[in-house]
Image 1 (cartoon, one colour):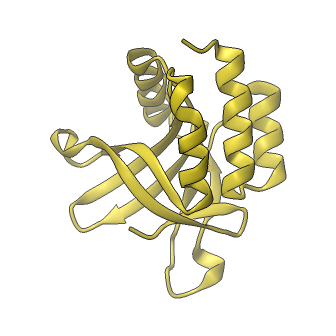
Image 2: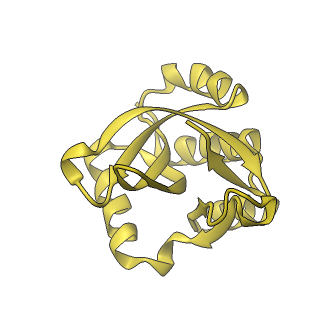
Length: 144
Protein backbone atom coordinates (compact mmCIF):
# COMPACT_ATOMS: atom_id res chain seq x y z
CA UNK A 1 0.00 0.00 0.00
CA UNK A 2 1.44 3.32 -1.07
CA UNK A 3 1.38 6.53 0.94
CA UNK A 4 -0.05 9.77 -0.45
CA UNK A 5 3.50 11.19 -0.73
CA UNK A 6 4.61 8.15 -2.73
CA UNK A 7 1.58 8.46 -5.03
CA UNK A 8 2.28 12.15 -5.56
CA UNK A 9 5.93 11.46 -6.46
CA UNK A 10 4.75 8.77 -8.89
CA UNK A 11 2.17 11.15 -10.39
CA UNK A 12 4.88 13.73 -11.08
CA UNK A 13 6.96 11.10 -12.90
CA UNK A 14 3.93 10.21 -15.00
CA UNK A 15 3.12 13.83 -15.80
CA UNK A 16 6.64 14.23 -17.18
CA UNK A 17 6.32 11.03 -19.21
CA UNK A 18 3.07 12.13 -20.88
CA UNK A 19 4.56 15.52 -21.72
CA UNK A 20 2.44 17.92 -19.73
CA UNK A 21 3.51 21.55 -19.67
CA UNK A 22 6.08 22.23 -16.89
CA UNK A 23 3.86 24.74 -15.06
CA UNK A 24 1.07 22.12 -14.87
CA UNK A 25 3.50 19.76 -13.15
CA UNK A 26 4.84 22.49 -10.86
CA UNK A 27 1.35 23.52 -9.71
CA UNK A 28 0.41 19.90 -9.01
CA UNK A 29 3.63 19.41 -7.06
CA UNK A 30 3.17 22.66 -5.11
CA UNK A 31 -0.49 22.47 -4.12
CA UNK A 32 -2.18 19.54 -5.86
CA UNK A 33 -3.73 21.61 -8.66
CA UNK A 34 -5.26 19.33 -11.28
CA UNK A 35 -5.62 20.42 -14.89
CA UNK A 36 -7.64 18.83 -17.64
CA UNK A 37 -6.97 18.83 -21.38
CA UNK A 38 -9.68 19.40 -23.96
CA UNK A 39 -9.74 19.36 -27.74
CA UNK A 40 -12.08 22.03 -29.03
CA UNK A 41 -11.14 21.74 -32.73
CA UNK A 42 -9.57 18.59 -34.17
CA UNK A 43 -8.99 20.35 -37.52
CA UNK A 44 -6.38 22.68 -36.05
CA UNK A 45 -3.35 21.92 -33.89
CA UNK A 46 -4.17 25.12 -31.98
CA UNK A 47 -7.51 23.69 -30.84
CA UNK A 48 -6.03 20.52 -29.32
CA UNK A 49 -4.77 19.75 -25.84
CA UNK A 50 -6.04 23.01 -24.38
CA UNK A 51 -5.44 23.14 -20.61
CA UNK A 52 -7.92 24.27 -17.95
CA UNK A 53 -8.06 24.08 -14.17
CA UNK A 54 -10.33 21.28 -12.99
CA UNK A 55 -11.41 23.62 -10.18
CA UNK A 56 -13.26 25.73 -12.81
CA UNK A 57 -15.88 22.96 -12.63
CA UNK A 58 -16.84 22.32 -8.97
CA UNK A 59 -19.02 19.30 -9.87
CA UNK A 60 -16.09 17.66 -11.64
CA UNK A 61 -13.76 18.48 -8.76
CA UNK A 62 -16.19 16.83 -6.31
CA UNK A 63 -16.45 13.78 -8.57
CA UNK A 64 -12.65 13.46 -8.63
CA UNK A 65 -12.43 13.74 -4.83
CA UNK A 66 -15.09 11.05 -4.42
CA UNK A 67 -13.30 8.82 -6.95
CA UNK A 68 -9.99 9.24 -5.12
CA UNK A 69 -11.58 8.39 -1.79
CA UNK A 70 -13.48 5.37 -3.10
CA UNK A 71 -10.52 3.95 -5.06
CA UNK A 72 -7.75 5.08 -2.68
CA UNK A 73 -5.96 6.62 -5.65
CA UNK A 74 -4.56 10.00 -6.69
CA UNK A 75 -5.77 11.77 -9.84
CA UNK A 76 -3.10 13.91 -11.49
CA UNK A 77 -4.68 14.89 -14.81
CA UNK A 78 -7.89 14.51 -16.81
CA UNK A 79 -8.89 14.65 -20.45
CA UNK A 80 -12.28 15.85 -21.69
CA UNK A 81 -13.66 14.29 -24.87
CA UNK A 82 -16.92 14.97 -26.65
CA UNK A 83 -17.79 11.56 -28.11
CA UNK A 84 -20.78 10.09 -29.95
CA UNK A 85 -21.93 8.33 -26.78
CA UNK A 86 -21.41 11.24 -24.40
CA UNK A 87 -19.10 13.80 -22.88
CA UNK A 88 -16.38 11.87 -21.08
CA UNK A 89 -13.78 12.89 -18.54
CA UNK A 90 -10.88 10.41 -18.45
CA UNK A 91 -9.11 10.44 -15.09
CA UNK A 92 -5.39 9.74 -15.12
CA UNK A 93 -4.54 8.41 -11.68
CA UNK A 94 -1.99 6.60 -9.55
CA UNK A 95 -3.44 3.50 -7.92
CA UNK A 96 -2.65 2.23 -4.46
CA UNK A 97 -0.86 -0.79 -5.96
CA UNK A 98 2.77 0.22 -6.34
CA UNK A 99 3.65 -3.15 -7.88
CA UNK A 100 1.74 -1.96 -11.01
CA UNK A 101 3.46 1.39 -11.33
CA UNK A 102 6.42 0.36 -13.47
CA UNK A 103 4.12 -1.23 -16.04
CA UNK A 104 1.86 1.84 -15.95
CA UNK A 105 4.86 4.08 -16.75
CA UNK A 106 5.86 1.82 -19.65
CA UNK A 107 2.33 2.02 -21.07
CA UNK A 108 2.36 5.83 -20.79
CA UNK A 109 5.61 5.96 -22.79
CA UNK A 110 3.76 4.10 -25.57
CA UNK A 111 0.74 6.45 -25.47
CA UNK A 112 -1.58 4.17 -23.49
CA UNK A 113 -3.16 4.89 -20.12
CA UNK A 114 -5.38 2.85 -17.85
CA UNK A 115 -7.94 5.43 -16.70
CA UNK A 116 -11.38 5.82 -15.23
CA UNK A 117 -13.72 7.28 -17.85
CA UNK A 118 -16.64 9.19 -16.38
CA UNK A 119 -19.43 9.48 -18.94
CA UNK A 120 -21.11 12.66 -17.74
CA UNK A 121 -24.16 12.09 -19.95
CA UNK A 122 -24.76 8.49 -18.86
CA UNK A 123 -23.05 7.49 -15.62
CA UNK A 124 -24.00 3.82 -16.20
CA UNK A 125 -21.55 3.87 -19.12
CA UNK A 126 -18.65 5.05 -16.92
CA UNK A 127 -15.85 2.50 -16.60
CA UNK A 128 -12.21 1.67 -16.10
CA UNK A 129 -10.30 1.02 -19.31
CA UNK A 130 -7.35 1.79 -21.51
CA UNK A 131 -7.27 4.80 -23.82
CA UNK A 132 -4.69 6.00 -26.33
CA UNK A 133 -3.46 9.58 -26.19
CA UNK A 134 -0.78 11.85 -27.56
CA UNK A 135 0.83 14.99 -26.14
CA UNK A 136 -0.18 18.23 -27.87
CA UNK A 137 0.42 21.87 -26.88
CA UNK A 138 1.46 20.98 -23.32
CA UNK A 139 -1.73 18.96 -22.77
CA UNK A 140 -2.97 15.69 -24.22
CA UNK A 141 -5.46 14.51 -26.81
CA UNK A 142 -7.35 11.23 -26.62
CA UNK A 143 -6.97 9.41 -29.92
CA UNK A 144 -8.74 6.11 -29.14
